[in-house]
Figure 1 (cartoon, rainbow, N blue to C red):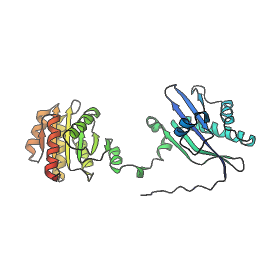
Figure 2: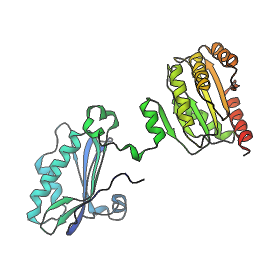
Figure 3: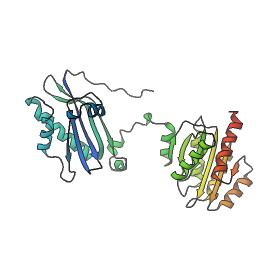
Figure 4: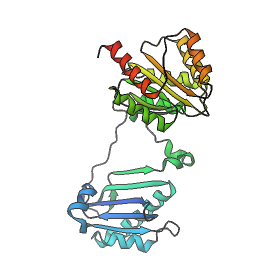
Length: 300
């Protein structure tokens, strides 16, 4: 669904140019790129007309100097009347890149108008996600309508969740174990519906919230809970599962594999709950059981 509309004033374009600033991790410098071939994919220009691309690298400890901006602008073949404004625009873009912790600023096209003005008609920026905590003014631009609602809900509970296209919901602790579990589900003939890492030290409430999140996906037709407890505890996980089952009906097969800290206590909680929970001993056993139960319940 369209949530916003961007309206731009029409412009009489004489020339289309390309301009970008990117963080080059290989050289640990900031690279500015310009080309006279604006309005095209820069990758296509680099492949077909590499001589049309000019670059300069800036040492971030020194910063960009005005002469470097002019040096770059001269390669664009602009009329003399536009050199000054273009150089100032390059300097301002560099400061914007630096002051917002950006890792990309791209203007395509940067245009020369009939009045010898230089305008950015289409621009995009991306930012260092690890620096957003100190850039609240940037984070305010975040448009939640452009993201999966499941991932938004997960972020509000500080859960690592990525929605996928399968039918078997996953609730796992640890990214490595989550990847292995998804691979094992596919090996057993199923398709994972999500990546969900509940992290270490998850409380019973966090586990219940995580299962609720998995069930919010209408495509989920079975759930696999696979916990290898270290910092975490199997009894916390088991109690979270039982708490959720006491509050709501779960109308899809639920397979639980617990291992590690307090595993006996966790298994006891599940047994004594009287709830319909299918237990498994190993990862392979859990994956095959959840796929079998999914096929049985759906007839697929």
